[in-house]
Every structure is written in structure tokens, then in C-alpha cells.
Amino acid sequence: MNRREIIFRALTDERVLIVITGIAFLWRAILSSDEKITFCESACSGLSLFIFGWGIFAYMYSMSRKPSDWPVTNRIYRGIAIILLVLNVYISIYYGLRWSGLLHVEVSVPKDFIYRDLRYVIFVMYYCIALGSVRYLKGMDEKYKLLIKERSKQHAKSIKEALFRLMTHALTLVVIIAAAISWRMAITIDNNITFWESTLSGISLIIIGWFLFGYLCALSVKVKHKPDLTRVIQHVAFGICAINIYAVFYYGLRWYGLLCTIMGEVEETYVSQPLELIFRDVRFVMLVIFYCTSLLLAKYLVTAYEDYTVPARKE
Image (cartoon, rainbow, N blue to C red; front, side, top):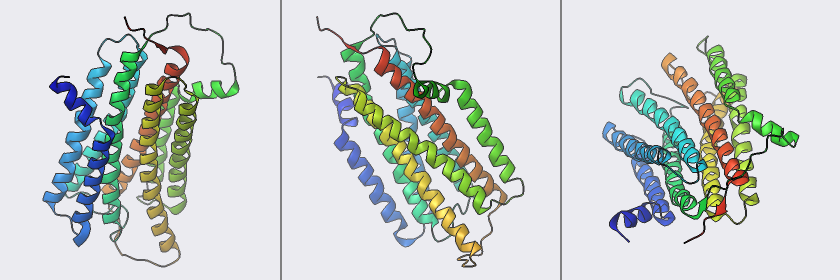
């Protein structure tokens, strides 16, 4: 075993990734103990996410360009790379606004520290989950090969299959993203987001996120005699679960604050600035894009399950 293989095994070892997540949790706990985050502390957090996120993205994208005997693995690599690109762009926008002093409050003044800590740990967790899937993707390339067979040209065999194909069609995903952008532009045109507008935004994300998580969990149960593919599906599902928790936590805090305002129990007098409202729109749209790209990735995982996968014979 050469040095490169040793490093690869160490970086993709699940125990190492759990330790990295634990370190991220302790780092943010220490940072927020005095309820004050300096620029240097924020810079360390941001740079660690940049290096981690863009490094994994570069690896996934490079692997998607390599020739493979099982072409669907290239699409899976590419799908994960696109998802990482979406999250990396979101993180870049957030820290760019934070460091330039244009973004002050996201949820509320007293709860922002908890929210920032959770976001950092969630994103580190997602990057670790994505990195952990690399070992099993490599195993798919090594242990399986393309099964040459004629593809069926029949129409979808069931309503469920037809619905899935419709949801994962590229045109459908573009329409969903366009609708999300139009929706956010419409509700923030008056520089104010009401409780019901926030509720509709949050519920739409929560429904699609947990539906996708449940679908992938069910798919991982259906996959038999393909342990590497099963683990890849599980890693994708756990990553979506992490982002779902992030969305639930954010909208839970937002709804709690808006309900307190409606009931007259105002905890703060801070008025959100226009740029902070725009960043909420950016967050919503980026989460929609994340879920849409995850749906596209699910399509590739289903393809791997249905059309290919026969064990490669060792000579």
C-alpha cells in the first residue's frame, strides 16, 4: 500500500470524519461561550469551510471526468460535485457579506449565535458525509462493471415511476428553481416578509427535503448484493438529513420570532435591513437548488440500481 492510498483511507475513514465533526462542534462551543465572535474567529471558521468544501468539490469533479467502465459513477460524482458547488457558493456569499459588515442579523439578536454555530457544524458534517462516500464510490468502480444490455423503450410501468421521472426531469427542476426565484421576489418587494409568507417558504422546503430523504432511505433498503452502492445512497441521504435539520432549525427560530411579534411579545427592536432580506431570499433559492440537484443525483442512483451493476470478475 503506497502513501497516497494510506492518506486516502485515512481521510475517508468514518471514525476520522466523526472526530472532525466533533472538533468543529467544540470549536464553535468555545467561540460562542462569551457570546461574541471576533473577525479573526469568523475568518478561521470561514476559511476552514472554504478549504474543506472546495477541496472535496475539486476531487469529485476531477473524478467525474475520468474514464470509467461503469459510466453512471461519473454522473454520481458529477451530481455530488454540483451539490457541493451550490453549498460552497452559499457559504461564500454568507461570509462575504458577514466580513464586509453588510450582514448583521439573520434570525434575531439573541439567537444568532446559536444559529451560526449550528450552521457551521451542519456544513462540516455535510462535507464529512460527502467525503465519506468517496471510498464507496471508488469501490463501485472497482467491484462492478457495466452490464451490456438493450435498454427498454417502454413507457413508465407505474404512476410512481412516471411521477419520479417527471420530478427528476431537468426541465421540471429548472421550472421549480424559476418559481422559487419568482416567489421570493414577490414576497420581498415591499421589504417585509409576513409570518404566512415565511411559513409557505419553510413548509415547501421541509416537505421536499424530508420526502427526498425518505425516498433515498427506501431505495437503500431495496438495493441488495451491492453494499458499496447502498452505502453511497445512505451517505447522500444522511447529507440531505443534515441540511433538512438546518432548514427546520432556521425556520423554527424565524417562526417563533414572528409569532412573538404578532402576539406583542417583542424581544428586540432591531429592524432588518434590505440587504439582510435579500440574503434570506438567497438562502431560500440556494436551498431549493440544493434539493433540485439532490433530486437529479437520486435519478443517477436509481439508474445505478436498475440498469447496471453486475460484479466484475477478477482475472
